[in-house]
Image (cartoon, rainbow, N blue to C red; front, top):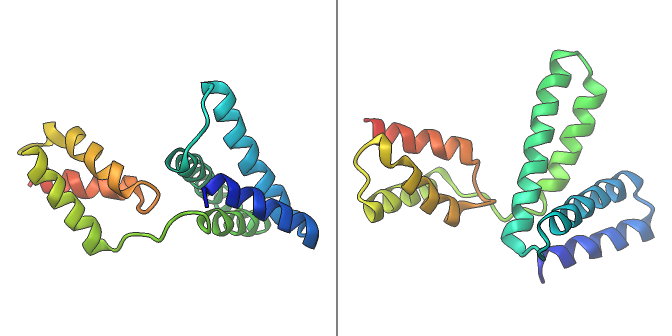
Length: 148
C-alpha cells in the first residue's frame, strides 16, 4: 500500500477512535504533502513523501532543542510524541554496519579518492538510505572516510 494511502487510512482511524492529537498531526502530514504537490504540480511518490516526513522530523528535533533550552518540558514532551508518531511511517532504520557497507560500496562505485568526491558518494548513498538513516550522520561518516 502506498504511504499516502496508509496515512489517509490512519487519519480515518484516528477520526473514528477520537484521538485528537494523533488526528491533528496526521492532518499536518497530509497538509504538508498536499502543499508540496500543489507547489510543484506533481503527485508525490513514496520516496518524496518520506522526504516530507524527514523534514517534519528534523523540524521537531530542532524545536526540542529550543524548548529544552527554554525549560519547557511540556512542549518537549509534545514534540517528542510527534517525532515518535512520524517515525512510525519511516521504514526500518539501517544499522551502523549496513550504513558503512553502503558507504564503502558507493566509494568503490564512484572511485572517490578525496573529499572533493563527497557529493558523488553522498548522492549514491542518499538514494539507497533515504528515510532509513540520518543523512547528517552519514555525511559525517563519508567525510571521515574520504578525509583520512
